[in-house]
Length: 469
Image (cartoon, rainbow, N blue to C red; front, top):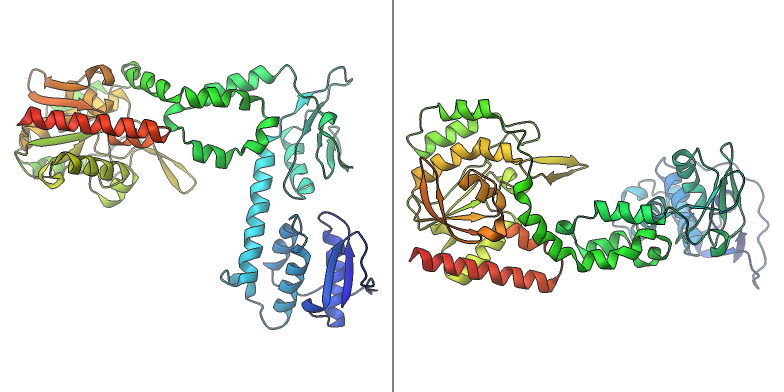
């Protein structure tokens, strides 16, 4: 058995030298033990210099990343990878189902996540009385990532003089040179400074209670980092107050800006000849080129003519846009579930949306829903009212604030309008009912709020059913 001693931490140079020498001597992975410092009863191997190894391009990045992992077994795993690649398995890095590759990929993912967390959660605080002005931060990474993150902070905070102290080492930047030093202590960085309140104000301003997901929040911002985050002190209060703030936001929907209302386009639409059938109306909608930011594919309403109920939602979502049908995504499934409990046949209802195209912004591979403006809702309103006039439902149910705005032609508070309604203007008079959109139930912050929201929604549907009887 051969024993190789490496320096504590990410001793990548030491591992490279050892791997080259071991391969040159033909030492298999089972015949070598890697250690970090310390002592052992096994004698230290006397390794001679050896030439670089000829490895596939995909192997060095794996070695570089996994070397930063804190697992002491990482060196043995990496040497086993190199040995197998050099002994007939050059395509091994591509086989993710191989147990060795799976474990190495998991370790790389952990390293990437740790680097991301350090980029996001280091908080510099001003060192009182220091001349020239300088800042310091304390952070506890899970792995040996200091040399990987140093350039990021140099580029991001190049105008400052700063230090980051960790239990494994420290990074220092003096506006000219990046340097690495010995391990630090929490007291090497100030516990607070005058910017604390600014951090809390900023976080409070960007916190969106309607998108609160405590599970996702804990995954993205684990509690172990909270002690270094000034904004963490206000998180419990923000979470507790999220449900009430969502209600307030719903009531504030009428404050949406009206300056984007395209009056000329509205007048042109109103001047068009009325469609004589749903098919003709559908052709008109499909021929329309939506505003920038919308999917070009229209999603048309569907269901029987002269139904008891017509449900009007906001706009098609990502899944609806892809499948070309309304209410087939998570919100549609929530609606179908509630209708089933009330005893309303989903297939006997007509379902449609106030806005016929999906409005979104792209973030990576995801398409993030964007709320239509008041002007855009009014722009689509003519089509919706023509659609309902052709379908002739007994009762129109507005699901959410956008549908309410579209059906009434004006912005109205959703929660105050909840219940029986009459959607009337100079041309239309439709008996109706107002309730929340099923997607609202999906966004509620916790199980209790979801249960209450769902019960209220089912109660609304029961009341609408009785109204239509």
